[in-house]
Image 1 (cartoon, rainbow, N blue to C red):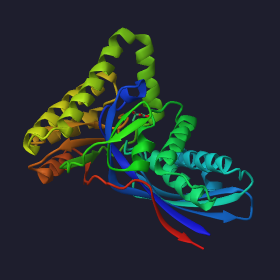
Image 2 (cartoon, helix red, strand yellow):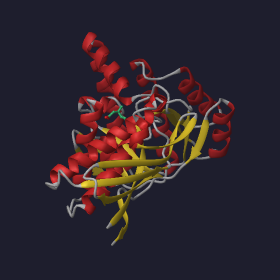
Image 3 (cartoon, rainbow, N blue to C red):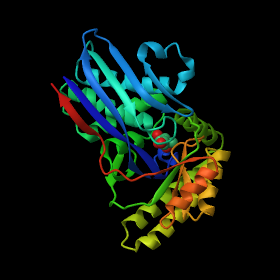
Image 4 (cartoon, rainbow, N blue to C red):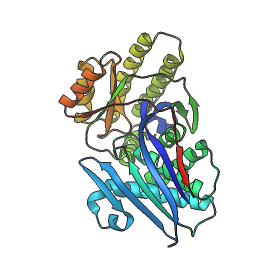
Length: 334
Ligand code: MEV
């Protein structure tokens, strides 16, 4: 039997980092996907193959045996650890610890770009392997297992990335609970800096600052939570799109300023954010953990001008759509 599952990337619209401290956040799945095939092998071992994993600057293909000897493939090795943990967790859940499983991954999502590539890989792997082992899990349960994988590999995680990847659409997330928001077409442009940030390191860096000066950082996190609640109010209101976009754009700009204050922006991220605003975007901010990775801009009137401005500033623009669908079982072959 062979199973193919796929799971989407995400963007965090508002509330990254503060969500790790129990504040709310809003995220959406986007139409870039990771595909995972799973099948049994008779070696009793876990075998992982990855093709065309996009790491900034290069595209790598690897199999598990090679990766241990290729230290340059640091980011690919990180992908490997999410996949391995995901398989081990599902084998444990299914009481199938000795079963040999081979997974083969292809992904359209750049690694370390803040677009949730690790979560998508974990969710698609859990989806494919659980189906292979006959476990009937809901997408919500798969999102929760994805959160456990992130906690094991990353140390700290709010669980928002695997939840939105498993569930899809537009969600409001707080302390492990999610709620779908009314679907809204958002005319956005994502700008990729071309360099990657480590979510694990960035979350740990914010934690250190928080522990050193909680009286300074706590109000920043509270303000971020308030931005999210205001954004939710705007999204669920029946105001015209034009007014809603202007208000959301303003909130994005404030949220970006606060993320910069936490130290997770970079020169390049800020350059792309300002280039987008100068080209007419109503709002622009980091999306995801920062430290490189991506920003996004809201540009209802002028997506292509904003995309050009991002290119001129040295980034790679991606005009993307929100994906209503989360984890999908694509094929089950006997
Ligand atoms: C990463 O996409 C979002 C962070 O808030 C981490 C997390 O929520 O687990 C930085």
